[in-house]
Length: 455
Ligand SMILES: [Zn+2]
Image (cartoon, rainbow, N blue to C red; front, side):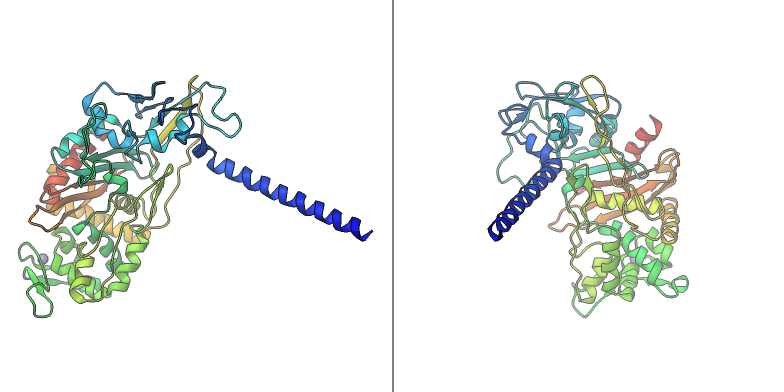
């Protein structure tokens, strides 16, 4: 009898293990199935490691790429569209890891857990991206010969309308890229770069100042053009010229480094650290499976380095996309939509396949703080950047001119949003070695926003 009992127990144990194993497999199959299928060794949907089915369009139905049976995709007829959307769409050899043709391969082949890749609607899917190819062309042309990044998105729905990274090239005629190439040509700077922010970081320090600085109303600072720390020549903060007496709003509008050094030091590095985290700049965002690169910061202990950290220099590095999302959260009263690159997916017979849910970020800024900062960013445009440079746009912004050293011209930044119910767009523009932020990057932002608002 005991023997029987032992055997029964053993059977039960084995059955339990089988059930657990099956459960684990089903779980993994549901989660990773599309990845397994879109592995380039799958000869059914790949030719020589290149995906051979599915096509990619922009939001207006403009063809960007069509995969063919040979594995050599056909791109848009337009050279300007091919170059401007290279990083969004991807290259033939899959060197651009974040390009849609590679990142969304599982969706392009039309995989689903029930029918696999033999789906009812026939093979291959049409993916409509949220980007507007014409706006990408405008952005790419506005960047000119500069390296840089331009990203605009709807902070309410998450739709990315423009995403252009430079340097880029014509994917139908790829250049030979040297192994020691440092231009980062395969890198989508919008989602995957980390760059010195300079004064656009003052938007983070400002959130801390608004919430934590005591007697902020009575705070003023007399800028002489430099703030000396210790005795050494290098231990000092400088402004391009003396700003004279500034209050907080003026300090942001003229981007007074010395004034912000004073504010940063009165808050202390722990507050700067807390707000850098809270604003999401140290997070990675998941854009339809593409993970953005989180920013990187040191939070030093020496006064002069603390001061530079609050001004967006020292070892501060931000990811352009996460800075744009923060601008969206300021506009949205605390939260913004997480960016989304897929507008819709259709089967060959035009049936919808898959739904995208709009997701919100955490609270990146308190709503009252966001409202104060919005007004200050509007004041920046009126007092410093010039409303006439942004005709008919109710734009709120902050520029940045980030020193990069090595005798190179500084990086120009411009970030912000439109206060426009119909066009709730947040944006970020980086023009590497472009010089002054408001001039170089601000004019790029204006061209792209005008195109998007007036189309
Ligand atoms: Zn100053």
